[in-house]
Length: 367
Image (cartoon, rainbow, N blue to C red; front, top):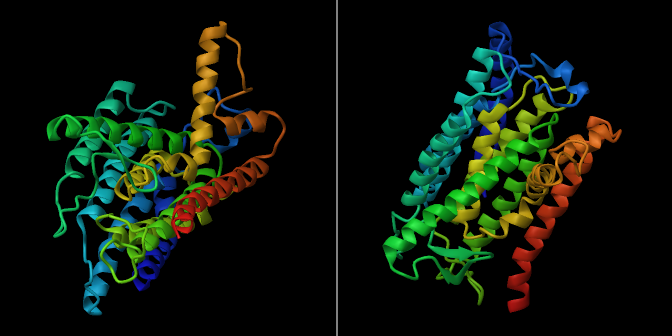
């Protein structure tokens, strides 16, 4: 528990203290947000607001993670140390953040609302995602557990194994499957990041859920003294909980500056990094399909875009929503931005609570 408090606390303080200087730097260089031409008219006042706040989030989390482990070592608490699972989360977190940074920088440098070309973004994300997928099946611990497995998971690994035709086919199918999860998560967070504080607040709750899941999996790990009939075979649950808490801490501090009226936006740097970390948590904690519930807000916002685009093409120009993503539909329906954000936070909290309830219920029912 001391590791979680340290990680979250260092990330919170580091982000809180660094962000004002970063905002001044971006303002001086005129690195401001370019607002979409087809967005709500009320968003025009946001043009020029500093963006790429995700840079501070990513760097704060990385520094806090290694600093926490360093402090724990000095304190003589070296039960786990830096783990393969922790480094894999950081790989996907920082890798997707780098793709987002390139996208943001091009937008700012060229003063346009579109950054990387679609194919460029797809290729770069695929490089990061494939690297993660391949490495996640390596690095077995003393018990033979790798950070991820080829089995499809819900609350734990199921009997549906992608390696049904051998390890090579299993690797290929797992890379495809993990990249699908990564793409869904990064797009979900990216689409949610349209109103002041919305994506940050919802993400804090999601990472809070994975902090609790990691703690529970550590306490009920198979082979430990505390483990009961229902136990968990997750490689590094304690380190996953630490990283979840650390990311939550950084996002809490970021939300201080991102709440309406936002002094800075996270940009694609932040949204893609956060989405990558969410996907990594689901894959490495063996709760892949449970992510649909825990990150339910991201799911329905992504679904609103799919429905809007699909219906528009099929109907010859008709729309289901006034505007997609879903949050803009309610803005155009007359809700204030604050109402949309708070009500969507409530939805995010309900989804997270439902996901945790489902996770815990398996253990309760088994008793």
